[in-house]
Image (cartoon, rainbow, N blue to C red; front, side):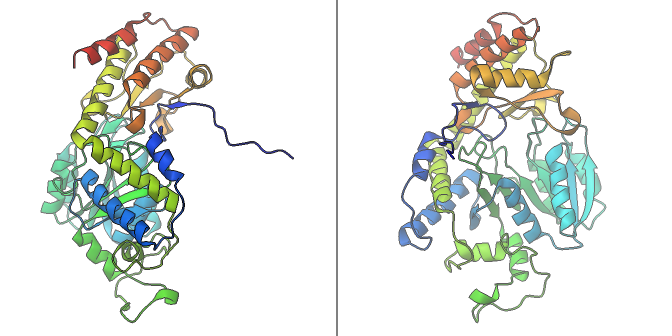
Length: 407
């Protein structure tokens, strides 16, 4: 029996993740394997931690990666920081707010869910009104809600969490590396991201950072497995972290000076993360954010010129994802299929109440390029016309070009 050689068709990934990996990242992944405790590899781990601190804009010592997807990173942090019975406030304004609730319910937390219509964000006063009731261990929230393309302002909520004595845990999976995420300045206790979006590496690694307050909680729950335990590993008094693989206490020792032999590191994926972070810090955060912002403005101008309605509260739209309403009478799935078949461009629909009602166009990381924006606008115009939508010829690309010319 003959099996297929891995030879994927060329694609331009303009969905909200995964996006195109930077070619430098893919080259790094082909480097020879090192042992996980080889001094060269340990040096790479240390550099990864330092670069991740710069991207998170934090001084947190505990800043490293977990060999899992971004969802696994969320579960790692949440199940480590939150004990059974802890009260957690979750302001949900899209699919992934509900994911936080799902994870925390499974580890026995007491959840209060605040809900907003999809396409909007929370006023800080809404969160404060609930915090005033007292007793909350933490607030967990999504920074960039890719299901709706909305981005929640965080600074004021972070201030409120500090005032009311609650941890502030943030999902920045979709925003880190493409928009400002100021962990220390915004009072974020723990922040989680992934590699498959603005970081521009393959999916499979989660970036995490957390402060001393959360570190103390984790250490109070520490349980080192018997086969690698030493005399210094004392029993702790708090409920142990329920997962062995996603055990923050042991992962912290793995990345720290002790280099506890917890698991076998995904060497090639660490090369990818290291190179992706190196590309980000070499470009510079401000330059990178400006690039995403410029391409977002060009995309928005082109869509407006085409007469396509942008979904949601425009004032709080993410610079890295744009949701647009599917024109009435148009088969959204057919349009996406034709974009892929004719042009090799992938965009996405959404979930739940927005499934089949909007398309989502990503503008993330390595995919956030002028040529991709212009190509996507031209291709979308052509496919919409093919499907009977009356759109002006050439206006979308012309409007985007005007944005680029006026920089």
